[in-house]
Length: 204
Image (cartoon, rainbow, N blue to C red; front, side, top):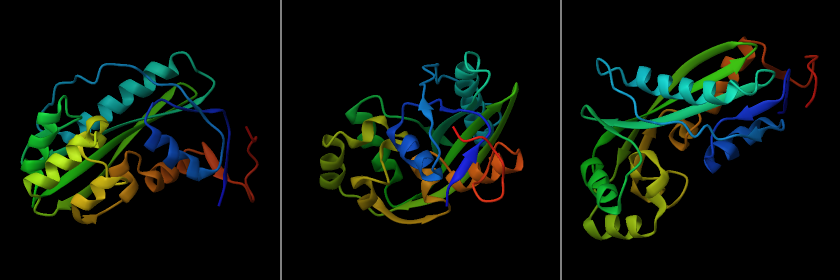
C-alpha cells in the first residue's frame, strides 16, 4: 500500500526511528530538524496536552520557512505514577529511570503536529507498556550499550530495549516515536494524502 501527497512533505525531526516509520507510507519526504527547546511547563497533569504542545512547537518552527509543504513534527514522552520521563541526561539517570519502571506499567504518549496551508493541527496517541522485573546487571548492561540515551524513558523498544518489555497495549510504532496508523488516518481525513489508486494527487 502506497500513498501520494498533495504537497512536498517534511519531517521536522532528526529521529532515525521516525524517519523509518514515515517511510512506510511510500512517498518521498525530506528531514528538517526543528532544533527547538523541549522545555515546557506541565499544566494540570495534562500529559497529552504537553506532548501535543511540544509537537506543535517543533512543527511550527519548521513550517515558518516551509509554507508550501506538509510538515510533520512529533514529541514522545513516558509517564509513570505522575512523573514525566523524557530523554535521560546521563547514564545514572537512565539507570534510575529503568529501576523505577521495572516491573511496572507505564504510558508512552506521542504528540503529533501536522501543518499545511497555514493550518496546524495536533493529536496524541497513548500506548501502555509493561516492563519485566529488571535486575541491576541487565539495567547496567543495557545502559552501558548507549542505546537509552536518546530515547524517552531511557529505552528503545525497537532495539535491545525490547528485552525489558513484558507486554504492550496499543500501537507499537507509537512507542517508537510516531503512531503511523493514527497519523495516516488524520492526514487522510484532512485530504493531505490519498491512496495511489483512485485519488488524484500530485506525486512528489
